[in-house]
Image 1 (cartoon, rainbow, N blue to C red):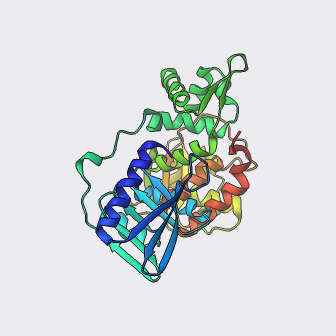
Image 2 (cartoon, one colour):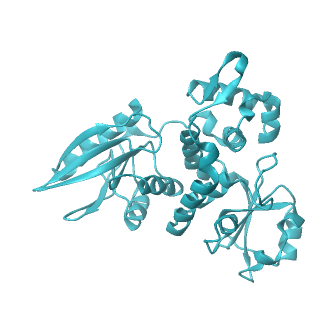
Image 3 (cartoon, helix red, strand yellow):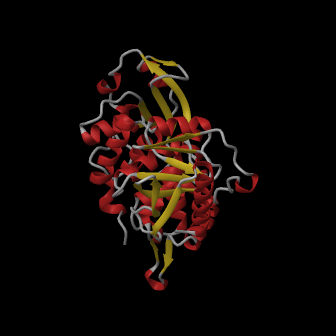
Length: 341
């Protein structure tokens, strides 16, 4: 586990023990192994010992709770989120989803009978304010990462080709690739070219940051459809668009019944709105976003965005039914080409 995360874990445990008087013992650290907890700890409560698998995050928001929930599905023991700070609104949501957490301010939620703890409202110390997001995980950088994750081997193509596929400037690709190399995601192999590694870890980071850094900037508008199942009766390609989110997930899994219709397009949306009688509504059940990539998606259904984006859309909702479907899509559509090298 990286030093920054270890520091957060140590401070959070200190704050937790001070607030509750309980003894906590870390009995194992795991160092940068994808799919595994960052540590294991044991909380002593009277004669009872409660074991938790720990996931440490620099920060947590509504949009990234889904990532945590997905990770907890695969942990061998009850998951415990440890993070820098959880505000009251997020704390209530974590409690609602029964995701245990502790933070460095002394806030906590644990419901593991016979132990029940819920502490909210403690403020974050100034010296632990969130750090700047690395450039590769800001909007333009995320577009480049999306291209790299969706197109195995493209990292060894000329940077100009990557820039074209990501719809960004050549200079953007240049500094993103250098930053990825510094972070250990790109390996320069001399005559054998470049290789993207630790892809599963990179995907996890992309999915975590995408809902806040890139997705909101792509929103063209939100609308409401009169006919709930209107999307079933149209050819989305007639409007130069692609299905994302829950609709795409329904096509991929035959499992989910969509409640929100997500569409990605570069085209003007007037024809789409008028033809399908969509009414502008900030709380509507139809969202139209800009298509932020410029490459052909090689899937069996050309009406859909890439499964990675479907996965990210579902995770961003934090909705339990979508999280379950996201796990299915990861297993069937993503794992086979995103696995470790």
